[in-house]
Length: 98
Image 1 (tube, helix red, strand yellow):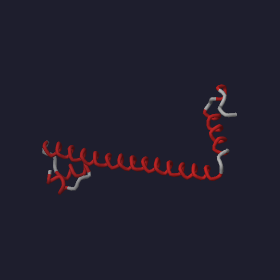
Image 2 (cartoon, rainbow, N blue to C red; image 1 turned 180 degrees about the vertical axis):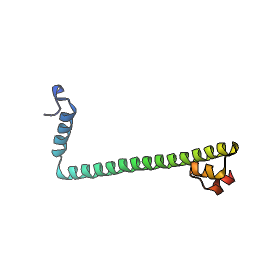
Image 3 (cartoon, rainbow, N blue to C red; image 1 turned 45 degrees about the vertical axis):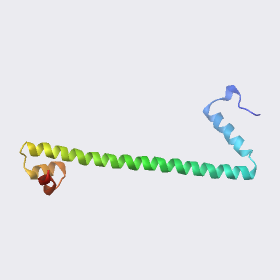
Image 4 (cartoon, rainbow, N blue to C red; image 1 turned 135 degrees about the horizontal axis):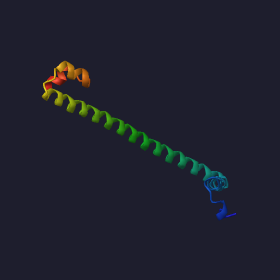
């Protein structure tokens, strides 16, 4: 059986067929394949982690910018610095610097 018959081309059978092909590898080829797959999965996980970390950092930065924008708008309306601080989470010193 060199190829998967068309009537068995479902995801489950595709994966089973691939697993059988890997199982037929010579021991040294199979070991090399498994090491390469570990490296590929590690690389993929590093990219996903970096992406998630970058997204979280970007969200935190965006929230901080939004707090400042809101504080400036309150300050322009003459709202007390203590109220602005309470509403935005910024310190009164930060509000005073705006």
